[in-house]
Each structure stands twice: as C-alpha cells, then as structure tokens.
Length: 270
Image (cartoon, rainbow, N blue to C red):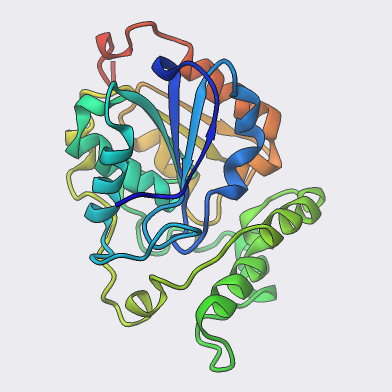
C-alpha cells in the first residue's frame, strides 16, 4: 500500500525513517527538530496505515503497518527512529526485516513491557492526571473529535516543562488526527504492537534508547533495565522530550547516528 510520506532531501545512503506514534495521529509533530538533519541525511516521515493522509486499508494491524514500511524502505538499509507507539512498530520492523534496519532509535517508548502500577506513588503524575481526567469514556465525544480532544487533554501529562505547553498545543493544532483505530481499541480488539520477544530478537541490531526522565506514558525506569547499545535519559523532559528539550534531544539523535561507520560491528549489551 502506498503511504503518504513527507521527504526531506539528503543522501539516500544516509536515510532516517521516522515512525510516528498514536496511532490515529500523523507524523507532523515530529518534524521539528529532526528537520535540522535534512541535507546531511535523507528524512522520511510516513503516515502509518490509516493515519493522517494514508489510506485506511484492511487489515488494520501492526504487522500490516510493518509491511507498508518494508515496502517504503525497499533497499538499502536505513536508520529508524520510532517514537512512542511508533517505537513498538519500529521494533517489529527491525525484528521482521533486520536486513533493512542499520540502527534503531526507540524514543519515548519501551522494549520491556510497562508494569502495572508503574506510576503509583508519583505525586506529580497523580496531580496532573487528576487535574486532566481522560475523555475516552465521555459519551458526548466520538471519532476524530474524541481523539483530538484527548490529545489536548493529555498535553500537561505529555510535556514536563510548563513553558513548553503553548508550543506543544500549537503543534497539536496542525496534526491531522484520524479515528481509524479508535473503535477496535475501545472494544479491546486492537492487536498489541509490542513484540513478546523484543529483547532477544533485537540483540543483533544497534539499539539506542532516548527518553525523558519524567515520561508519564512509558516510565524512564525501564531504560536502565533494557539491554541496549546506548541510552540517554534527558532531564527536565517528559514524554514529548523533543519538545521539552529539542536541542539536547536532537544532539543525542545525531550523536548516535554518527557514532559508528559500521554499526553492526557492535553487539547490544556489550
């Protein structure tokens, strides 16, 4: 299936594929600050199947999303950055087509499962969650309206620094939301994107974890428990770490992508 893709010019052999989260979001909230890499690197920002401007063709599953990305990449191998839910899709891509992934950046996501009660006892999380209750069960909202409203409702939980909120909300105004995956999620029918054997199956691919210390979606505590090539946890940053700390976040991405000329010579965990 042909995905909608935003492309920024650069050398084809230095391509970075960026996999957005959501789902039911588009790619646009990740363009900055990554666009600063354009010229030095070719950047691909696809909208996943059923997201943004890409068609909502059946089957609407993580494996179908991965198949679309494999078709998009073609050859040769590329570097991949997966953000949030996109981090789970990016892991599946690396597992199913390891020959196409040179390096994998899992940003504001996790390789290990998030344990139940991961945020219990965190007073700031509890304060923000109580002040901004979820809208998923609001009978007055449905479809795209609900997905958009929940994204704005979640803003104070997704960014850590209060001064980051206005810019983040302006960014959300430009996101093309869909509701392709909403009904299946609410009915418990949406397949999990998490690969059950991710740690073992990613052992041959250079893996970089990039996280905000105050992430209220995927706990930063999982970073230290995950075998990886490298990891950075940014201070004063939440789930949208690229918005809380754009310069430090971009510098971390650039450092990892430029670290090894032959990245597969390294083994994760060593």
